[in-house]
Image (tube, rainbow, N blue to C red; front, top):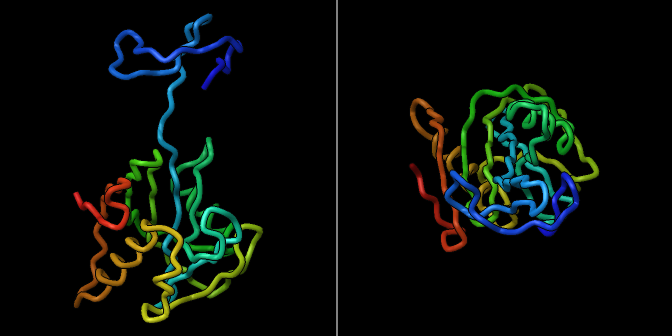
Amino acid sequence: MKYCSCCGSPVSLKIPAGDNRERHVCDHCGQIHYQNPRIISGCLPVHGDKVLLCRRAIEPRYGYWTLPAGYMENGETTEEAALRETREEARAEVVLRQLYTLTSIIHVNQVQLIYLADLPEPRFGSSEETLETRLFSEEEIPWDRLAFTTIRNALRFYFADRAGKEPEFPLRHIALSPEQDDLVLIR
């Protein structure tokens, strides 16, 4: 950041009084510009014994498969964001069950929330962001064509949790850093 979004004056990196880390601070009006992680919200839609995946029509990872998810907008809850992204990317209406995975993606300053959701009717489609949508059984998942580690983790957790005599789906809290891109830290 070079200029203040409030007054247009140059900014400097400094530690504001009462803070403990460098922030961009306006040299003229004193405005402190905080930069915080972005929130991504989405769903793991389930219909029968299958899950709904979307093949990306946008970068990053064009052509790879993912769960419907995207950046949360101002003025909406994480649940509303998950439902909206599912409508936008998969043209699907789901019923949220519970928050299922919460992933801190440290190296890109993101927090991803994936809700376990029911897809009552197998109605879905493509959009501007999606080349195709499809229901997959566990055996059919294109594991080597999944777009992101977070999606692979959520799917692995789901199929493992579903396999028990009495399926349980506990909240999974994960932290990923660049050194651990394919490793999962469960807290």
